[in-house]
Length: 184
Image (cartoon, rainbow, N blue to C red):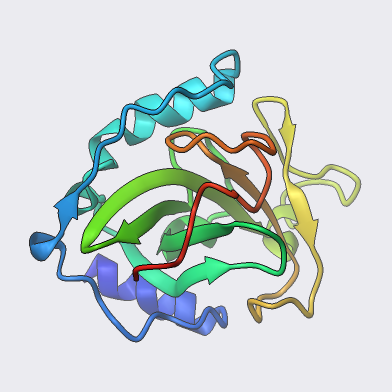
């Protein structure tokens, strides 16, 4: 029930909910032992600790569901498939231990957690914080995305954390050149 409510919430926000719902029991899971060069970050450590159990997509917590399909961008790289928790997107809170989205890369029927995204709607955030007080998470400033945007969302703040897939451009950059939408 909560999973369905999150998907409905995502749809209400204007997120194009994926036309498919992954049969989680049919997926193989890839656990790579990648070397992540950003081990000095407190935020990366917290994300890894909080999301370790979810590296297997079948263990994604209740409330998270796929939306947007695989997100690729105008620049090199991609983001992957976002499993969004609409309840967390709508709570105006940003906590390292509770990302609003888990990001998986799907290749050849296998799902691999590559990172997370923190998302908070601008109006919700500023209903509880001063206008000149943007969200900051463990020293990382969330990026502002105005409306209109490619996702059809109202203005929002977001931060990607590539905790499980090294990103040559940085652990907190939107697009990851080592993530692909090929083979979906």
